[in-house]
Length: 416
Ligand code: HGY
Ligand code: MN
Ligand code: MN
Image (tube, rainbow, N blue to C red; front, side, top):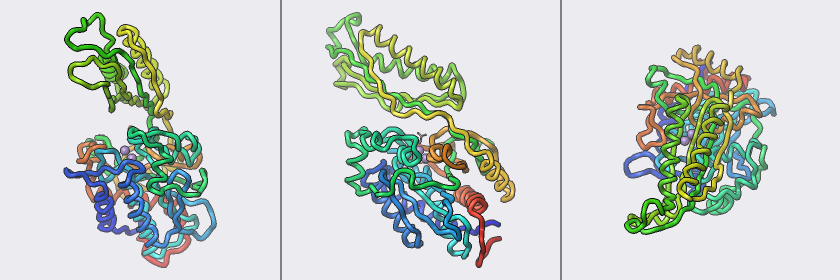
């Protein structure tokens, strides 16, 4: 069976949602639990409501919409996120939510009934850009993260998740664990260069690499840039710079798939002629192999301590996120691969370099992902782009797998 989907409707919804938080040069900024996120939630829930779906929101703002099945069984859930980073694109997360919704709406139009209910979901703060950690909503609803801890998480702007939920009215009353899928599927852009480089249409995602986010705070001593001899300095800035260079060296020495990123670095007092008395920086380390990720972490820690000691500074740190690598359900991955074959899509198996909501469902129910190509491998960039045909391919494959898992009871309408 292959469900006919309405590609034009999908594309126009992606554009409509992309208007919320639109940036002047393209792309959009819809940080988690911001006013823009609230508007995005309102738009998407309006579409869910118009389609007659029953909408549920839980205590951290995760939202899902259910289309009933013939049996009162656990739903097959298609989900992702609609929050973005500050230099976000139109597709990261949004494709998985709007694509899942397109599957459900096309089913309704085709008069197709399924045994299991089908649901489409978006999860709070997948990005982790404003509030750490990432995958916060999905991790909380699936028991990987503690609700109270997450509600107390304070963002880079000094606002807590609890406050932000209250400000935009996004806190619902469904309890943690209320969403218990029979299977979880996430369609997502690859966000990397592999599919495009190999001229492939689909990524059959085997799992997600491990993630380690650390925020280092270095305390030194502010001093005059001109009068203070180098030997007398306690320069927090130079320690931060050394840690940043070490992060890059670790990735180079360990080689792929190890990656390292220093995304944030701040100096205090941040003035041209004052030796920094304080520096904070974040280091994002990732690897598909947990043992090697720990090697990277250990080496980074050792160097941070050594640089601080040599400069006479003090070091403190916070773990902002720490998730071990995840392997997706073998049968579901096989089904995605077989379905891609059946639909005639070129494809390959691959791990995900990015974190995703699906990884939080993997311990609790069969979970897996479908990737479609990213132009120039770009994401977390306003020029993020995926061609319309690739978007449609991904949604058709999502439909094929979701329908197989949900079981088609009867089709009054058209299934090719
Ligand atoms: O950081 C990530 O991998 C995802 O974008 N949250
Ligand atoms: Mn994403
Ligand atoms: Mn992202």
